[in-house]
Structures are given as structure tokens and as C-alpha cells.
Image (cartoon, rainbow, N blue to C red; front, side, top):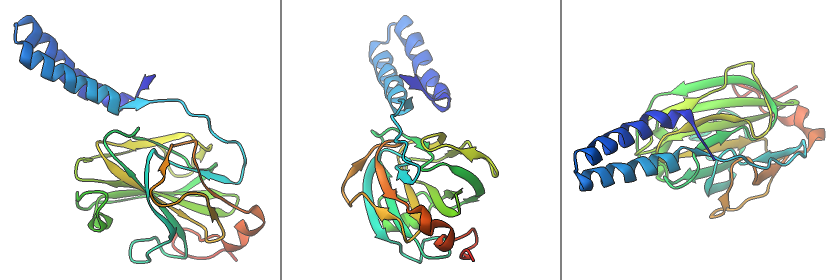
Length: 224
């Protein structure tokens, strides 16, 4: 299994001192640091996934537990009308983030904020990064939100870039959440409490015939 490069400094920062402690015959320190290095290796794992190929499906952008699946709360959503799926990532989940659908990145917007627990309503004011994807006229917004432990968002796509469903687009370090905002005509395929797998679990199905006519655009304007 691959390890994401973002984990290398953490893994080395634990295992190198562990080796030094072992040479110095400090077994308790060496063991503790080795276990920490093992956790970092586990946390930054990057497994391959079997991505479904149906062009109109939206897959989960992350592993985790579904907290919201339904109409969005307009206080926290981007401008416009959306359905929302929110996924909480515990420290035990794979933290690699993936593109939920194929398309072109139309906008990336970072917003500084707090570092409250990602499962709490107050986390809507947390630091976040939004990635807007245009899929044949339908807009899907992926929002990376940090938590109490996650202190950095890694985004590896840029505006104008074309992505394929399941492509790796970034990650968040040490517990976080992801919001996915979907056109209102999307049919949700998940429910609250369900555990989803990034790149594999189908979150929703789009209907291409309605996509261009009804999808919100960046800034909240509807297609004409």
C-alpha cells in the first residue's frame, strides 16, 4: 500500500528518534516513538480504489461516516440551492480526498477559520477550502473542512484543471470533514450514519438531461 508524501516528515520524525533511542538502550522511549511512527504510517496510507465508471454518478470524496444527507442549511452552504452530503473523517479513516465526479475545476476558494471538532455544528466556522467542479454544466462543490486535530488542508488541484472521477485531489491532516454540495436534481444514494469509501461509494446520481438547465454556477447564478 502506498503512503502519501505528506506523511513522510511525520513518519521520519517519529522513527528516526525511535532508532536513536533504541541504540541508546531506552526501550520505553523507542517503543513509544515506534508506535507513533506506525500510527503516522497508518494515517497517511493511500490505497487504490475501484472507481465506478457510470458518467452520471457522484462518488464519495473521502472515507468516513455520513452526518448529513439531504437539503442544505443555507446558513453554511455556498449561494444557491443545493443538496448536501457531509462526511466525518475520524483519525482511523483514510484521509486521501478524491474528485467525486469528472469535470473541470472552475474555482478554488480558501477561507481561514476556527479549529473546532469537525462533528460539531460550530465547525461550520472552521478553516475550509472549496473546490468547484463543472461536470457538463452541473456544478458540484467539494468543501474540505479542518477539525480540532486537523491543522492543515492540502489541496493538489488548481483552477482550470481537468479531473477524472476518483482522482486524488488532496487530504486533511488528523481528523476532519468533507461537505459535498450537489444540484437539487441529484438523487442521493446514501443515508445518515452510513460509512462511505472514497472513490467507490456512490453518493448520488445526476440526470444529464437536467444538468445544464438547473445547475448552480459559481457565485450562485443559475444557468440560463
